[in-house]
Image (cartoon, rainbow, N blue to C red; front, side):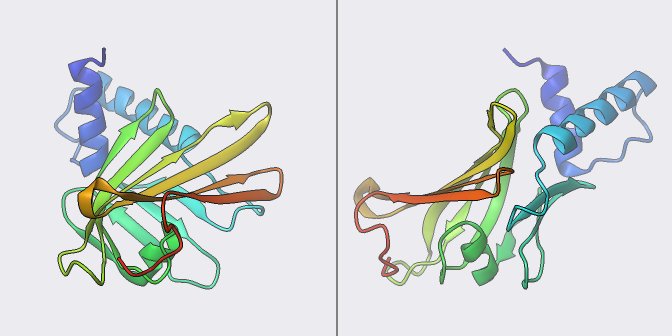
Length: 180
């Protein structure tokens, strides 16, 4: 069970709430927790086509030859086509409304909407980025899902590792169709 203090601390970090009125021991605890986010939930390096970094209350994604994509808590983040490319749904526009940080499981889950030709409001979108370790190899796994009609989902996954390799695969029916 997660303590109220842990939940509150994550909320302060996630929403970038000012810390100047907080007790000193809580400020130190927040500094440690933010350090864990930066060390355990961040991945950069020469072998990664995506740099993924937490800094000052926002997630920043850098992809070569593209503008960086940033996501902040507390409002809708319109990422456009760059978000579609980032979250493995090329030629789709993505917006992110919220995210959840899970330090114990070493993952971040983003929630939002994905553009759709068939639905002008878009489709429900979720992407989970986790940071598994395979022996001594750091990795980042991205699993993105768009929920369509009648609960059908399109899932795309990609794993990046420090071993200079990339594994890509898609799951679900008609997963390469861009018609929804």
